[in-house]
Image (cartoon, rainbow, N blue to C red):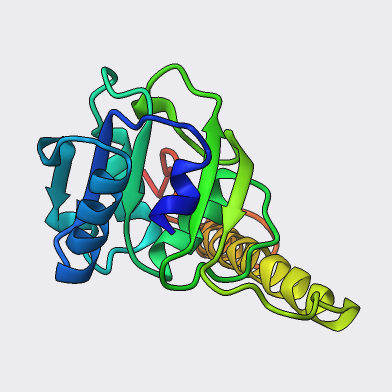
Length: 191
């Protein structure tokens, strides 16, 4: 895979690797193949088996002096990061796969949702048959379900807030819609 990556003719400024032994060994193999000093490898323990948000924080922390960076991370976090940054039909990045992204951001700190474009995607073993319409539909459905779940949580939160407001308003008025004694304003009693 490192040889296939070298055919892209990119010279990375930095290789960022998870602290996992296999990830570090892979980063070292890439460094040798690309003729990059091993000092260009940065070990980041925060991306070991990290989720998308943690990996994205590591990307945001990159030094802007590094224009091209190779990231060695783990599924599902790295696959979810790929889906976050680009529109892609890649369901899962298998072990050893690489995705080459072009990011439209002025700084690593500004890398965000759908700010990139997938240039190339390579996996170690090519599948002999293309994905059929059922696989495409199932993948589309999984992607949409994540958005539906987020919308459902938002809607439930909004309904909860509106319900609380309605209870507060209802408790401050009687059945005729008039304020109850002691709930609002100044009260006049027998003087």
